[in-house]
Structure formats: structure tokens, C-alpha cells
Image 1: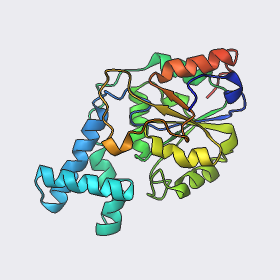
Image 2: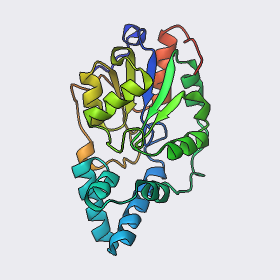
Image 3: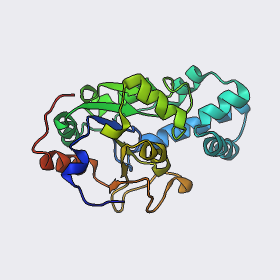
Image 4: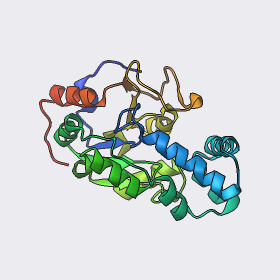
Length: 240
């Protein structure tokens, strides 16, 4: 893991890839807890479970299949459309436009893409609330991934093929370190976005890693990290 920003690491990058949840918005935002609670509620309604039992089942599916949705699809043939519509039906009014991040994204040379295990609609609504929706060229969501979530290798390959991404000329920003294993193996530069000191961390315990060989950079301030890259590259070329 390299804590120092070297301009040569990013000079060749032409595709900037970002996870959505807990990456493009702060880790202490109430957005992910709202989604998490909706997932629990969905399972409770579906199976007639109390809150604790629904929560336990939710986490079982998440750890085994990568997303609760995939577990429900494989084991119970649950409609992905119904699930995504219900779990992402949340109030995003707590999010505020992030002008610093918008400016940094606009200044990065090359394409900017979102790669998320959530839905395209959720990504669009969230990016809009953050004032970032015009910064990205496209969104690769769980539907585009054929409902196979990160960190599965096939999902990244599908993403690379869909958007003609050369991994050796791309960087990925992500809040869960295991989701950077395959990108690193394929030649992407990788950056882990972690909570600022004292910030709430909504990741599950098994998602939190220390130093890892597949993580090139770690930052708790995405806006400042990108601004530093732009400054070291001489101001960036702009465009989105």
C-alpha cells in the first residue's frame, strides 16, 4: 500500500471508476443505513419474520452471495425489479451537493464511470442529490452485471467489455477492500476510500481490512485526494 501520491502513477489513467455507496458520499451519511433497513424490512415482509430474524437472514445471504438480492434470486426466485424498487425507495434529502468533489471530477482527464452493486436508478438519484450526475459518462449497475455482484471476476470482465476499459489505464475507488482484489489482479490502480477519523463506519466487520497488497492507495478524503492528483498532473484536462 502506497500512501504517497506520485504523479507517474496516474499520468497514464484514462478511465476513472467509482463505487457509489459510502464512496461518493461520506461514510457517516444516513443513506446506507436507510437502504440496509429497507432490505431487512423486505425480508421480514417476504418471509413473515421478526426484525432480528430478517436481519440475520439478510447478513447470511450477503456474506454467502455478495448481495442479499442474489441469495433471494437463487434460492427463492425473488423478482429483482421488486427488490431494487423497494430497497432503494429512500429519502435522499440529507445529501447535500458536493461542489469540491464535482470540481475535482470535472477536472480529471478521461472518462468517469460508476460501478455499483446497486441499481442504475439509485445511482442516478444519489448522484443527482450530490450534484455529480453530469460528471459521469455512464453507470454499470447490478442489472448490467446480470445480478452477479462485485467482487466476482465475471462482473469486472463484463464491465471492462461493456465500456471498453483497459484495466492497465484505469483506476478504481471503492470503500470495500475485497472489491479491489480482481481490479488489482487485472492491472488497475486501486484506491480504498475509508471513513475520516471519528466518522461512523457502516461497513460490516468482515468488510474492514488493514493493509492489503491489492490496495495501492488509501484515502479518507476523496475530494482532497483527487485534487492532489489534478495538481500534480498540472491541473487536469477537464471534460466528463
